[in-house]
Amino acid sequence: MQMKQMFEKGKRGAMVLQLSGKIVIENLRNYPAETVRKLRDRLTSGGEARPEPRRQGFYDVEIDSQVFYIHRTPKGKVLLLAVWARDKRQTVAEEKELVAQPSF
Image 1 (tube, rainbow, N blue to C red):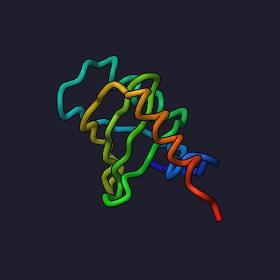
Image 2 (tube, rainbow, N blue to C red):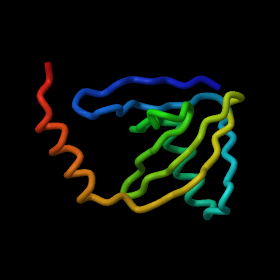
Image 3 (cartoon, rainbow, N blue to C red):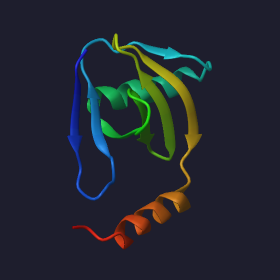
C-alpha cells in the first residue's frame, strides 16, 4: 500500500492523503458500514487530511460535514478511531487565524 502526500497552499498542515492497493480498515467502534465505505472511497480517490503534529501516522480526514480520525499503522492498516461532525464555526475561526498571521 502506498501513500501520496501533496501539500496544499493556504491550509496549515493540510495534505492530500491517497492510499493505493487493498485498503484494510479496522472499525474499532463499530460504525455503520456506510461510514466505513465513505472513508475507504475517500482514501482511494484522495482527499484532504491533516496529520497530527505530535503523533506519527494519525490524521483527521474531512469528508463532507464529518471528520474521521484515523491511524495508519506501519504495516499499512487503517484504524478508524472516531468520527464527528465538523464544526463550521471552528473551521472559519482557524482560517481567520491563518490570515491574521504574517507570512515571511
